[in-house]
Amino acid sequence: MDSYRQVSPFDEGTHFDYVVEGSRGGIVRRGEKLGPEAMREIACRGIDFTGIVEPPCDSPRFVPEKFPLQGFSSAEVHPPPYYAITGVLARGMVAAGLTSDLFTAARLVGILWLGLGLLVMWYAGRELGISAAPLAAVVAAIAGTPTLLHASATVTNDTTGLVTGGLLVWITLRWERGASPLWLLGLASFLAVAFKTTNILGVGVCAVYLLLRSRRSEGPANRAGKRSGITMLTGAAMLSAAAWFVIHAILATPVVVPIPGAAGELRLLDVVENLTTLITPVSYGLPTDALGTPPYWALGGILGVLVLGATVYPVLRGTFSERWERLAGSAGLTMLLGGGLFAVGSYFLYGNVTVSARYGLSLIPVLGVALAAAIRWRPALWGLWVFAVGQLALVLSALVSA
Image 1 (tube, rainbow, N blue to C red):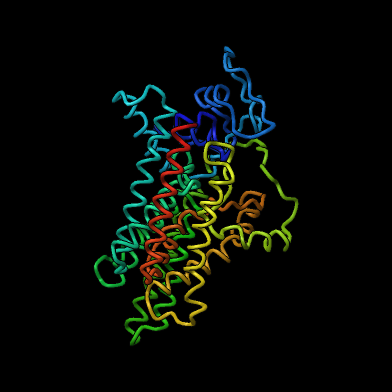
Image 2: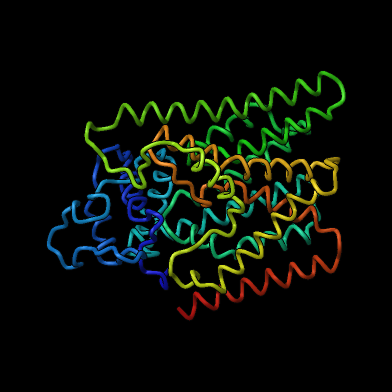
């Protein structure tokens, strides 16, 4: 974090502005502009994107119109839970003397989100019956992925994807064997979307998984049970999204806000072009920080190929007899359809068709669990461990020397 002082171009400045507001119990409304804390951080750190000119850091007063999007917040479309939790924890770190900088403290909270996400992913894998050795290797590999580290080391609600995606899979598997109540499944789905609406992809994977399981269940009672889980997952997610859209519309101020990447009309080509956007979320591009160089893009690309292979393998094998194979198939289907569906939804809700692979971070726990389950050959396990340890060493070396 110290080595990457610039503000991430993935809207980190506006996310931090929302964290400041959330730490005070507030919500950023549509039409509101950046506060003084966020403007100072953006001006003094600079945005990691070529062509953006920020006001001088020593300006006595900052004018929102001098910032991108005329100073309007682009984070106002997001629900407040992530920002409230991160803001309170960040202020607690400042009060405890861990740092004197609220921006740095908010970034430090990302480590907690990452650790929690890896933990629930571990429990999801163990619930599926995966051995500790391959699961640990996959968790280590994912923990060192440059793209995930960037999301966790900057201020963004993208980092909730790993937590909510892992929690959804874990609770779904526990509910399936009768170890968790149905209402807990609904609560996990509701909270996933409440942290970030794009986390609905994690809900979709679990719903598709239960649908595939219901087709193989013995007896109408078992099939009806699986359908009740699907209804709870999708119903809770839709309720969460609808509740936020209504609140967001009620709180919006009546001003014209510039729309990044505004699209005049929705074209079939826009939908088709986004079909591959979410394949795979572990290997999307980074800005020009210590990890945003070709060697580290390659690391994410290798892991992306591995997890993609784990989702394709059951299809090529022609069987979905095991639970992990159905999970993998569900993830593959969601990755393929999710980008196009997001493009359509984004156009009608926000007026653009911009879809980023970052929106698929809630899929990573399922992809990781599938990869761990697919490793049956000991040399493959050793190879994955070599990759995971080597990747962590290279990434840490890059961060230390930056």
